[in-house]
Length: 505
Length: 111
Image 1 (spheres, one colour):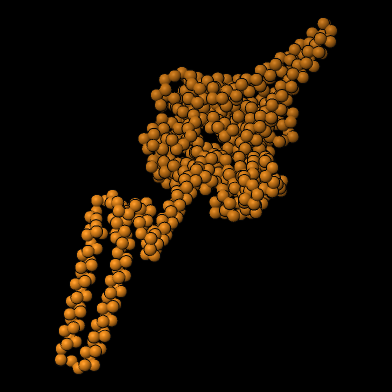
Image 2 (cartoon, rainbow over the protein chains, first blue to last red; image 1 turned 90 degrees about the horizontal axis):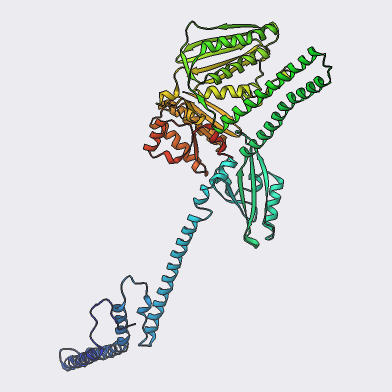
């Protein structure tokens, strides 16, 4: 309190020393003034009227000085207390209470104390404001308006009681294809145009007991692809300030994968059931046949054998495709003589083409480089291309296989003048189990895996297979295989590698 | 440089073929930016056939990664070769991307 001095500043003289000094000065002043008045009043240089007026003025001035002196005398203790308090206060300190005067109680001390109280209140208000600002800043770092929610892959919207979007994170902007500015204050029914969802949000906002719910929403943007969004709605707070938190999760890929899996199972089941049915029927027939009907039994066994081979091929292809997808397909690195491989193809398919009255021609250059790759898998890829060409080419039409070496690639073109592929089907022919929607191929057996497998295998070798086709005019499939081994280019000396390794190379 | 775009399920795979350098980098950048927007972030870059990138190429990839980061996602890169991985590590951009050995495993990461 007053009287203490933490700063070491010089304190004023004690009151006991200053009072006599002031009293002596006052008495001396009055005596000197009285002498001056007396000397002037007794002088003859001025007229009596002027002297009287001067005397009255001097007396009035003396009274005024006396009143002022008395006033100062009475305020002296307060001013001394104020001085002590100010000396006791540390500049910059927030503890202004140290300036309060308690030793003296007069109006000046009260005004002073009131001033200090006002200062203290203002200081507290400033501290409170500063604290609030810091709190809001801290909340901003961890709250909805901050960057924290922008890190989430799920979209988050905050919906006000009057069903307007009050805040949105970055993922919500991505999923809804709108900027934060466009989402802010937008009516939620214009942002999420789904009646059931808006009812769910309204119900969640209206009742604190309503926990919200979950639904799925299909978004069809003007550009881009259809997106399936799982929307979860939850209520926040109670009463008039209750808000709804809407979480958006892009599940398009999950739904697409589910559909693909279901389609795969349905198609695989169908492909397995067809040969199994045939095997069952021909086994029954063979059992029922008389032992003497050797020829008919032999025919049954041939059919059964063919169907078993078909089943084995299907299982192999499914396994290969699944191995590719799992990244565990082994690719050997053999010396592949592509011309030998094509010559063997010619031997294999010549009889079939002849039987179907399809003109099959091969055009091979005199010399081809040796390719580093998996002989068996490259052979399977070429088999698939050629067997498709022969299968889907009607009688009297042509199939041509041309091979050439350009720019470090072996390029094999398998072209036909067959039924061709429509523009709608062409982009999907390399999809697993996809078969063109053409009535003319309904009777032709096929798993829908051949092209998918062939392209994947060739891509693992650093090459590719592309297709061009015109409906009713024919198709051309081009296989490009690099002559150099991609693995050896990067110093990989292994003889086998998985798909992942091949990709990395 | 050839740039191929294909769909794997709901995921868009953008596959540049050739080095991502100079004007090719700008061309690739425009296509990548458009794909980021229209695919709603369901995209990956198959760099299996990218032998190397220059600073403009790196900038294009970093810009796309930054655009996705703003929406809570990371740019997925599949099949980066040793050269590309080294460049990304030296420029300290490696951690800006999710790296996958091949396209299929990158596509599966969206599940």
